Image (tube, rainbow, N blue to C red; front, side):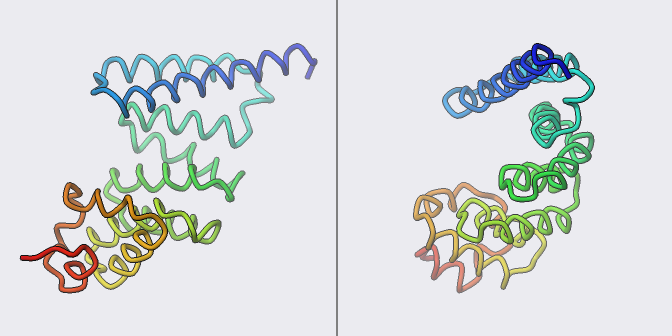
Length: 187
């Protein structure tokens, strides 16, 4: 690949990532309309389509592709690129989180749980991984595992306590005595 072609490819990857970052930043602050999200995600995919063929093989390419589809709520289609990204860069937590998110929404809690367990092999100190794993284990009615991961999430980052009341994924274990003890809730 020629240096100019590679430079243009890097610029396109950065632009594609930029559209996704814009979606995530705006979604954190405002209620972003689905049409706006989809339009930005489509722009991200358009950038990826312009890449030189040799640059359509890396983990970054597959992650951006999968996350753009995830944003557009095309979860089934996102799984393939995210799995490819995970295979190429198994040490990146964000890939495992996106893959698990999509698997859950495809009705595959077993695969969502497996993706997060793989993420824990990379870094067992990531509170978000424990928190999401707790949610998915709760939904799968693996209450013991859910409670272990909830306790670990709280130990690693107390901000996750503030999310418990609003999280519907905890409904299957909400009345469990250990859940009540961990969250300090009184029934």
